[in-house]
Length: 185
Image (cartoon, rainbow, N blue to C red):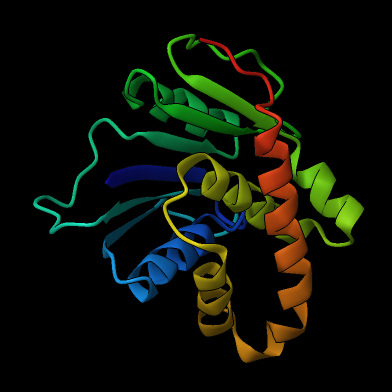
Protein backbone atom coordinates (compact mmCIF):
# COMPACT_ATOMS: atom_id res chain seq x y z
CA UNK A 1 0.00 0.00 0.00
CA UNK A 2 1.19 3.52 -0.80
CA UNK A 3 0.30 6.62 1.23
CA UNK A 4 0.99 10.11 -0.08
CA UNK A 5 0.45 12.76 2.57
CA UNK A 6 0.90 16.52 2.74
CA UNK A 7 1.17 18.33 6.08
CA UNK A 8 0.80 22.11 5.85
CA UNK A 9 0.46 25.10 8.14
CA UNK A 10 2.36 27.99 9.68
CA UNK A 11 5.91 27.57 10.93
CA UNK A 12 5.78 26.79 14.65
CA UNK A 13 2.71 24.52 14.39
CA UNK A 14 4.79 21.34 14.36
CA UNK A 15 4.32 20.60 10.67
CA UNK A 16 7.85 19.29 10.15
CA UNK A 17 7.73 17.38 13.42
CA UNK A 18 4.64 15.48 12.27
CA UNK A 19 6.31 14.59 8.99
CA UNK A 20 9.61 13.59 10.60
CA UNK A 21 8.00 11.44 13.30
CA UNK A 22 5.75 9.67 10.80
CA UNK A 23 8.61 9.15 8.34
CA UNK A 24 10.98 7.83 10.99
CA UNK A 25 8.29 5.51 12.38
CA UNK A 26 7.58 4.10 8.91
CA UNK A 27 11.31 3.54 8.42
CA UNK A 28 11.50 1.71 11.76
CA UNK A 29 8.60 -0.45 10.60
CA UNK A 30 10.61 -1.40 7.51
CA UNK A 31 8.70 0.61 4.94
CA UNK A 32 10.05 2.73 2.10
CA UNK A 33 9.78 6.42 2.94
CA UNK A 34 10.35 9.84 1.43
CA UNK A 35 10.17 13.04 3.46
CA UNK A 36 10.27 16.28 1.49
CA UNK A 37 10.15 19.51 3.55
CA UNK A 38 9.25 22.92 2.10
CA UNK A 39 9.71 26.12 4.08
CA UNK A 40 8.52 29.67 3.47
CA UNK A 41 10.96 32.54 3.78
CA UNK A 42 10.30 32.85 7.53
CA UNK A 43 10.53 30.00 10.01
CA UNK A 44 8.08 30.68 12.87
CA UNK A 45 4.89 32.14 11.44
CA UNK A 46 5.84 31.59 7.79
CA UNK A 47 4.38 28.84 5.68
CA UNK A 48 5.65 25.32 6.08
CA UNK A 49 4.68 22.07 4.43
CA UNK A 50 6.10 18.64 3.95
CA UNK A 51 5.26 15.68 1.81
CA UNK A 52 5.55 12.18 3.22
CA UNK A 53 5.33 9.14 0.98
CA UNK A 54 5.15 5.72 2.65
CA UNK A 55 5.09 2.50 0.66
CA UNK A 56 5.64 -1.22 0.99
CA UNK A 57 7.58 -1.04 -2.28
CA UNK A 58 10.25 1.21 -3.74
CA UNK A 59 9.11 4.77 -4.31
CA UNK A 60 9.67 5.81 -7.91
CA UNK A 61 9.31 9.59 -7.69
CA UNK A 62 9.60 11.96 -4.73
CA UNK A 63 6.42 13.83 -5.61
CA UNK A 64 2.79 13.58 -4.60
CA UNK A 65 0.84 15.63 -7.14
CA UNK A 66 -2.47 14.17 -5.91
CA UNK A 67 -2.03 13.17 -2.25
CA UNK A 68 -4.35 10.73 -0.57
CA UNK A 69 -4.37 12.82 2.62
CA UNK A 70 -3.93 16.48 3.50
CA UNK A 71 -3.42 17.94 6.95
CA UNK A 72 -4.34 21.64 6.89
CA UNK A 73 -3.43 23.45 10.07
CA UNK A 74 -4.48 26.88 8.72
CA UNK A 75 -6.61 28.51 6.03
CA UNK A 76 -3.85 29.38 3.52
CA UNK A 77 -2.71 25.74 3.57
CA UNK A 78 -6.23 24.47 2.98
CA UNK A 79 -6.72 26.89 0.09
CA UNK A 80 -3.40 25.94 -1.47
CA UNK A 81 -3.49 22.16 -1.18
CA UNK A 82 -7.15 21.02 -1.07
CA UNK A 83 -7.60 21.10 -4.87
CA UNK A 84 -4.79 18.56 -5.19
CA UNK A 85 -6.25 15.91 -2.87
CA UNK A 86 -7.43 12.97 -4.92
CA UNK A 87 -11.09 12.01 -5.08
CA UNK A 88 -12.06 9.83 -2.08
CA UNK A 89 -9.02 11.17 -0.24
CA UNK A 90 -8.99 12.63 3.26
CA UNK A 91 -8.59 16.20 4.48
CA UNK A 92 -7.90 16.67 8.18
CA UNK A 93 -8.47 20.23 9.34
CA UNK A 94 -7.41 21.97 12.54
CA UNK A 95 -10.92 23.22 13.35
CA UNK A 96 -9.73 25.47 16.18
CA UNK A 97 -8.16 27.80 13.62
CA UNK A 98 -10.13 26.91 10.50
CA UNK A 99 -13.83 27.59 10.84
CA UNK A 100 -14.82 27.86 7.19
CA UNK A 101 -16.83 25.14 5.51
CA UNK A 102 -14.98 22.70 3.34
CA UNK A 103 -15.54 23.09 -0.39
CA UNK A 104 -14.78 19.50 -1.35
CA UNK A 105 -17.57 16.97 -1.07
CA UNK A 106 -15.75 14.17 -2.89
CA UNK A 107 -13.36 13.58 0.02
CA UNK A 108 -13.68 12.64 3.67
CA UNK A 109 -13.38 15.83 5.72
CA UNK A 110 -12.35 15.49 9.33
CA UNK A 111 -12.46 18.61 11.49
CA UNK A 112 -10.57 18.30 14.75
CA UNK A 113 -10.23 21.18 17.22
CA UNK A 114 -6.60 20.24 17.78
CA UNK A 115 -5.46 23.42 19.54
CA UNK A 116 -8.39 23.27 21.98
CA UNK A 117 -7.80 19.58 22.69
CA UNK A 118 -4.08 20.20 23.24
CA UNK A 119 -4.84 23.09 25.61
CA UNK A 120 -7.31 20.88 27.51
CA UNK A 121 -4.57 18.23 27.79
CA UNK A 122 -2.26 20.83 29.31
CA UNK A 123 -0.02 22.12 26.52
CA UNK A 124 -1.05 23.62 23.18
CA UNK A 125 2.25 22.48 21.65
CA UNK A 126 0.90 18.93 21.30
CA UNK A 127 -1.84 19.96 18.86
CA UNK A 128 0.28 18.48 16.08
CA UNK A 129 0.27 15.12 17.85
CA UNK A 130 -3.54 15.26 18.12
CA UNK A 131 -3.63 15.67 14.34
CA UNK A 132 -0.99 12.97 13.80
CA UNK A 133 -3.15 10.58 15.84
CA UNK A 134 -6.02 11.27 13.44
CA UNK A 135 -3.69 10.59 10.50
CA UNK A 136 -2.72 7.25 12.03
CA UNK A 137 -6.36 6.27 12.49
CA UNK A 138 -7.36 7.31 8.96
CA UNK A 139 -4.45 5.65 7.16
CA UNK A 140 -3.26 2.87 9.48
CA UNK A 141 0.08 3.46 7.74
CA UNK A 142 2.23 2.95 10.86
CA UNK A 143 1.70 1.18 14.20
CA UNK A 144 1.60 3.28 17.38
CA UNK A 145 4.61 1.44 18.87
CA UNK A 146 6.75 2.73 16.00
CA UNK A 147 5.38 6.26 16.40
CA UNK A 148 6.36 6.27 20.07
CA UNK A 149 9.82 4.88 19.23
CA UNK A 150 10.20 7.58 16.57
CA UNK A 151 9.14 10.28 19.02
CA UNK A 152 11.81 9.12 21.47
CA UNK A 153 14.43 9.31 18.71
CA UNK A 154 13.38 12.60 17.12
CA UNK A 155 12.33 14.58 20.20
CA UNK A 156 15.31 16.30 21.82
CA UNK A 157 16.30 14.68 25.12
CA UNK A 158 15.34 17.82 27.06
CA UNK A 159 11.73 17.33 25.87
CA UNK A 160 11.42 13.63 26.76
CA UNK A 161 9.36 14.61 29.79
CA UNK A 162 6.69 15.50 27.20
CA UNK A 163 6.49 11.93 25.82
CA UNK A 164 3.51 10.88 28.00
CA UNK A 165 1.59 14.02 27.00
CA UNK A 166 2.43 13.45 23.33
CA UNK A 167 1.12 9.90 23.64
CA UNK A 168 -2.13 11.14 25.21
CA UNK A 169 -2.49 13.65 22.38
CA UNK A 170 -1.96 10.93 19.76
CA UNK A 171 -4.65 8.76 21.33
CA UNK A 172 -7.04 11.71 21.57
CA UNK A 173 -6.54 12.31 17.83
CA UNK A 174 -7.26 8.64 17.14
CA UNK A 175 -10.43 8.90 19.22
CA UNK A 176 -11.57 12.02 17.37
CA UNK A 177 -10.97 10.43 13.96
CA UNK A 178 -12.87 7.30 15.03
CA UNK A 179 -15.91 9.51 15.40
CA UNK A 180 -15.71 10.34 11.69
CA UNK A 181 -15.99 14.01 12.57
CA UNK A 182 -17.81 15.92 9.81
CA UNK A 183 -17.83 13.35 7.07
CA UNK A 184 -19.07 14.64 3.74
CA UNK A 185 -19.09 12.72 0.52
